[in-house]
Image (cartoon, rainbow, N blue to C red; front, side):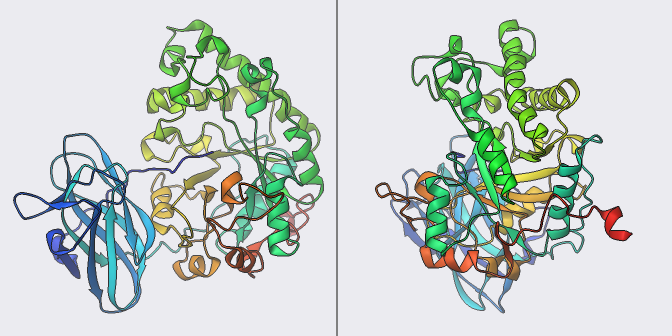
Length: 480
């Protein structure tokens, strides 16, 4: 599962007189066990879940506003905390240090008149001076003008046709997706089908985890390659991530099946990449080669793949992010060159999911930018701030997708905010299913009525409403 993503976004330079509303934190409502600081000029003690402060701001008309939190870290280091507007989580603010700084959540819809804004503990340990709002800048008019040119000049015809469809659709509709490790008719997909009255997601997400040599050596097995071929043949799209488990010699005894987590392995990517761990470097190559076998089966079957390796790296909870940005980017580039140049895999559309500008490997390695967002339960907002954050990673226009999500954003809110993620891909398990009950839809994160509305919406593409991607016209064909 992709954990709740965290990111760094400090707004561009602005003057305090741009604020159209500003409320001192100490005059707001304290939440949990938050306290007014001894100086009487800020709120602090965000130490427990639920601690925070809520203020009411007035804006002259309904529209998009940037929320500004003037804050400082307590005790040093980087701290990240949640921001809600009118009871819905809209983003996070990051405090990079103990000097006063401005955390900004951009492009939040506020109604005319009174609106409640709160900052609550994620990491905690900040002092909050004031919360303000200012008018948002408009989303650039060319955001959705993305050329369907893949980074691999030898991309297969199937990959090029899929990318052309994604670019043609971008900004007009959003494509539905669901992670379901058990394939087209697995429990998660079946629950979606039952709850929506017969709709399947256009995108099927699965994981190459079981093909990690360390997992295979322990007896793990999988049929996701065969499932992917089946879904493509039935008219769907497939995306893969890889919870990569290192060689068992790096097991630290905590959880031999979950060694993709940093806490469960002794593998050090930096040492493998800088030559200190020669065995580890060879393991990286061997493991990539093992995954290439499966991807080659998909290429031979004519299946293009939205390939999302080394996901959520900047969070550090996976070993490929634990050594920092430089070793991670070296590994990402190594994987790209080995899969494309050594193994001749040209059916991959590369979805980069590092979630921080400092981890961006370069335009020549990225076809699509993915953001993973878990905002809580029954939060249907567009998550515009994260969309704009992803937009800032590069000056080149790239597709931006919601590569993992807990709640599904309301398509009406996406249209209102002009934030049209290319596709979403809801994570499996608790985000779809009840803990007991075969194929029983949960509704814990996205309520059933909301799910039905979304899957039936005119601006949402399901598997049934996908065009024939095998014959989808390329731009030069369409011009003829």
